[in-house]
Amino acid sequence: MEFAYFTHVWGRENVTVRQRYDQLWQEVEAADRLGYDYAFSVEHHCTPEESWMPSPAVFCTGAALRTERIRVGPMGWVPPLRHPLHVVEEVATLDQLLGGRLEVGLASGVSDEPFRPFGADFANRKTLNRECADLLRTALTAEGPFDFDGPVHQLKDVTLSFTSHQRPHPPLWIPTTDRSTLRYLARTGGHTSSTMIVPRAAMGLVYRHYLDWWREEGQPGTPRIGYWSLVHVADTDAEAEARAARQVTDTFVNTLRYGSVKRSGTPAAPASRLSTPDILAGSHDFRFLMDQNLVFVGSPSTVAERIRAAATEGCFNTLLGEFAFGDIAGDEAIGSMELFAGEVMPLLAGFSPYQPEQTDGPRVAVS
Image (tube, rainbow, N blue to C red; front, side):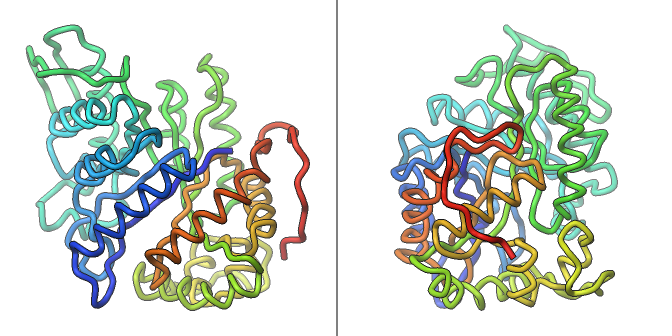
């Protein structure tokens, strides 16, 4: 199991942009110091009520100046919003700044809202996203000038000023549960991720196929499969829930605007029967989220067992944990990160959803 500090860099009332970014750098520095494997952020545009991170390059540059060992990246760039060669050059530059610690996430986008201000092509976003991944591999592995004949962009006799530090190129991720895209990732050696709004039973099924396709392609090792959710750890379950309950639901309902979808099943349906509309519709109800194990809130032992159960069902091996949400920020968010690193990570050190555990840790019931 690997662990990522993940941030949307959500804005906050009565906090300036400069102050929010100062908090961000403190969180990133803590993630590096505490032994998290990754630091990931997003690319979001024109969303004053939500993310204040329009530039993955800013996030990666700031992290490069403040960290020593943690791997850093966007999850991810949105290639359909720009010419893919711009992404290639940013990737090469940032990987050099990070000394070979860059992870490259490429996201096609789920809503046309951020596409409209740019006049970008939302209908062909998946084609453009895959084209960018292909161009990255072509450009960063070229020795000298290269040509590229993509479905949208054609390049002739192009030479990069310099290539990436990692050869042949930094690791590539495309967040998806789409079978066609997962087959593509298995063929090209790319990683993937998903979020807690995707039903884990369905996610686990398709990701187990992805693992099979990965092996059939002769790829080495195991692909990284990420899972994003909110995380808050305190000394006891009661303390964690009392502090995080309102912040969790406010984040889903007021920041992410979940909760306006009519539930298709019953509130008591087990997670294996939930649909995405069920999860969205239940996002205003903290007990629903906890009962279905969709957020990870509690004492260290409880959070470890919840992650273990979720990873086994959803077939993921990399937790993308968002620790700073609502008004949980600054020292409080970092305190949760410290408890997670010091007491949760060791409990999951030998755990893999794909093979028997190498160590035994305390077990608690997950409702």
